[in-house]
Length: 173
Image 1 (tube, helix red, strand yellow):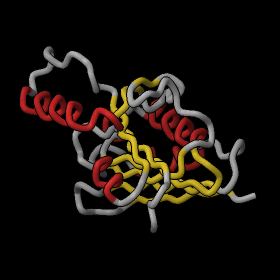
Image 2 (tube, helix red, strand yellow):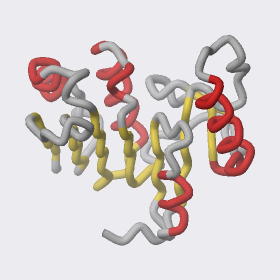
Image 3 (spheres, one colour):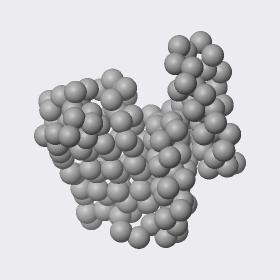
Image 4 (cartoon, helix red, strand yellow):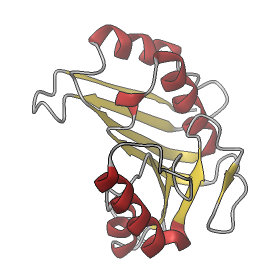
């Protein structure tokens, strides 16, 4: 898959290194995380705090702060919102593990809103954190009625090396 010139949004980027990697592949990638630029001093994980701070400092030109379930309100990299039908790919690795089911559904629907026609969502999660029933429920609940030619991939089991649940849902008009 060629990413040259494609817009990619990485949800829950943290300090994963995915966004800089995608940019090296030619993508116009942005990383989104709730914690960029925030005061993290109350948290116990000093090492994680330090890594996040260093990562943000180094790559802040293409990192944005915001809640993945409401992409109409973000800040950073010259942005205040992410417009409808403006992104080719939305990716997330291990962020869904930390969301409740309602937030997962809202985040998926928000990702669908920002996708261009023909866009794809690829979400990877830990099988120990999300049950097969929750995945099945998400597959039935996501709303593809307001868009066309969108593909949603949700794969569970990455961390456990057990890809036991997977769904792909698409709508073409």
